[in-house]
Image (cartoon, rainbow, N blue to C red; front, side, top):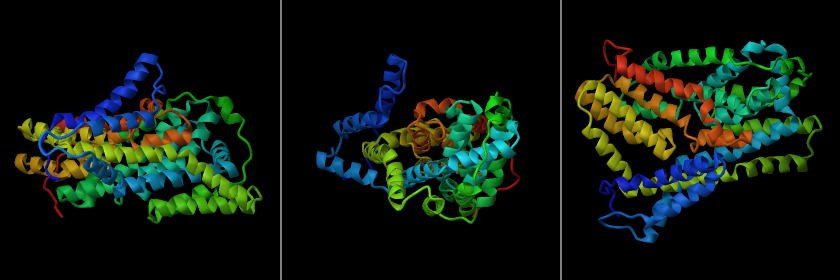
Amino acid sequence: MSNFPEKNALGLSPIIMFVLLVVGSGAITQDFSTMPILVAFMLSSAYAFILNRKSKPLSFVEKVEVFCKGGGDSTIILLAMIFLLAGAFYAVTIDIGARDATVNWALNYVPTNWLLPGLFIISCFIAFAMGTSMGTISAITPVGVGLANSLGVPVPLAVGIVIGGAMFGDNLSFVSDTTIAATQTQGVKLRDKFKANLLIVLPAALVTIVLLMLVDINGAGVVTAKDYDFWLITPYLIIIVCALVGLNVITVLAVGISSACVVGIAKGIFTYTSMLHSVQKGMGWMQDMVAIALMIGGIVALMHAYGGLQWLVSVIKKRVKSRKGAEVGSAALVSFLDVTTANNTIAIVTSGPIAKDFSQQFNVDPRRTASILDIFSCGFQGLVPYGGQLLAAASLAGVSPFSLTPYCWYPMLILIFGSLAIATGLPKFKSSTST
């Protein structure tokens, strides 16, 4: 099987098929939950198997092999593990009352008009320390849901706040895989990319905080805050500490689950049997998400084998004619790849070499290119309803992922400020610092 399939626009059609199935059924019925996402991905996978290359067509057995290798990619398996552990952490902390205790603590000690901005800032802080939006969403979404119920605001709004903060931290973190991918593909130092990136996204974060302070909160919800047991909050505190010391997300979630179980046993809330059933219950909540992650990996692999992604790259390369065009081309390429693959790291790694060529050919500062790749991939990753971040958050909150996108204000704003940075050429740098 050739490693360099010919370019073929039809190779991108499986993901378009998925969007048409979900959006089309939602538009017809006025309900975007009509078409279950897992079913839509199954139908899109079936359609992908019908397609083939024009030259050197793949046999059905070869297609199955490509699909399985894509689904078994290390990033997909890691995502599946995070889903399962996140579900377990969510179930155990709810069952011991950790979420409600944390919410009541916040209602007692945090000023009312700072509760929602505080949720955003905490999510930013944890994601920056941990280097992963998925881990942050898994840990903080339960608190967001509890706050929403107490304050009388829509649950999707609170979850969208968590997603926004998670994408802020993931975008800037020195240990984030997206940051590492962006800097390595462009040959720049982590600190230099951080400085360039921060100048673009910090205004978006500040605007988000201002908007959240203007949200109308139901005062009655604050008045009814109840007493809380501080020990029930400790699993969340342990999660934060583990993130600050730089532990891997798998380790962070495992420690969080263990600490919640210990607290549950020590407080007499759990028996050993009920504790194990709580862990199993939470993992069961995330089984659909695991299946979706595997299918996404398989579909992306088939689209690559059919030449769809190669066609996209060639189309954008033909239209780049200037320095600003090079930046627009890099942003468009990584954005479309993120929308089609639903994985910002894969989008950056795939588009990185092309973006570097653009930078060298049209004299674009590599720090700007690295920032553009990370900003636009994270922006769209925080908006696509079939991406891992929104799928995990929606599953944990018990809402449709499509209901979250309108409330993901920060991802929208970084796309706006990223576009303004390209349009104005700001920020400017005196000299480029390479690794």
